[in-house]
Length: 251
Image 1 (cartoon, one colour):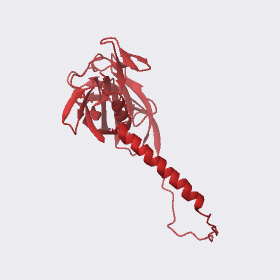
Image 2 (cartoon, rainbow, N blue to C red; image 1 turned 60 degrees about the vertical axis):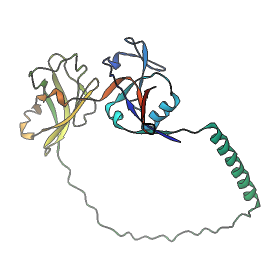
Image 3 (spheres, rainbow, N blue to C red; image 1 turned 120 degrees about the horizontal axis):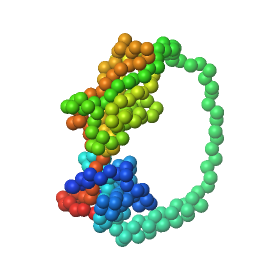
């Protein structure tokens, strides 16, 4: 029988997961003396398998906020059904072996297809290569309300990526300053930003004009409304809402 369920964390925890000590069972939290299981990087089938194998246990977990809006399912079968299916499978295998022994091998003749040396289609042509330039984007990430750097305690380890730059740049916690080298197309209209801080994430675009680049340097402050930052990771006691029973319980 298929069991459908959703995840729930009724009382989110404010501890910093990155400061916990990893071990073979998860990451140990000193505050509540528990192991926290990170389900945020697991697929839906892996989450369902974990829930099926840990029914009845009290679990503290870390999940993506989007996972709390998803539906999961796993198959629950009884031991009686397992024995029945095993017996049917054994009888089918035996019958297949007997049938295979009785059949004569069928002779087949393989003929090579005729090769066609003619190719029909549209003539391809090379697209003109768009000109790319190397620049350095310099500026500060600032809170729109205070015009100061974001609060380092609330938003620790602030990292910035522009246009899928190879590695995220660590923003100066005190000044909010950054300097990121990257390559851009001359005819680009926008720069694509990704900002990550602990469990928070923001993706946005800002306008770009190659004429604003002076001496290969683009001076560009990034003004952030903290409400734009999305809480992507949530920790706490993991609750399971079984859809078919319309009941909620914590495992």
